[in-house]
Length: 170
Image 1 (cartoon, rainbow, N blue to C red):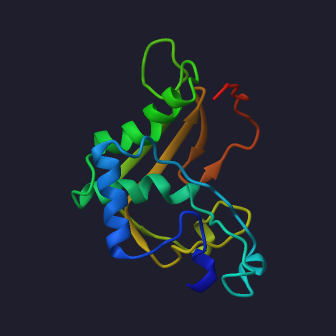
Image 2 (image 1 turned 180 degrees about the vertical axis):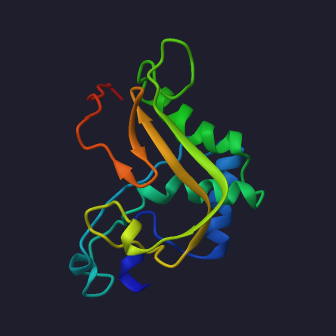
């Protein structure tokens, strides 16, 4: 993979990854998010010192975390807490991050046991590459709702709707 996987924090050893997992479970890490950086492949060339840092990962972050839950690294509840509840609470974003009456319906419908393999054809990011090409997932995002509007439906994106801008002080 070389410089294609140059990102911050850096991908290091198995021991480092285990320490990050333990930090999530212990509460030392407050939230899980991506620094989605869809650089063109040409921007990832030239070795580690010249390559841009970051990867196109937002499309695969939730299914990656759910796979770790399947392996017993996290509970599904922990994944939801760290990827939905915590960011909304940390940034004091009102009416977000939970399924509650009066809250915006920002939801993802996922299906376990729906094996699929990452190929360039299914990559939604404009850069059209992923370090996960060839990886097979057992979880699949089927639908995504933003503010109650169905925006993603089994591979099709509704380009006519735009979400609302969020404002926060933190």
